[in-house]
Image (tube, rainbow, N blue to C red):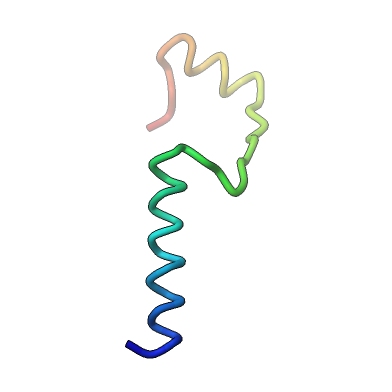
Length: 47
């Protein structure tokens, strides 16, 4: 196996380990407007 493939394999295994350990590289926080929040609470979402 060449060096590039070995590096790819090692990175992939590390990523899987992090997913299983619930380690996040980043998180996103969405701002939900009051109108959308009210629709979801009352079950009137626009799907």
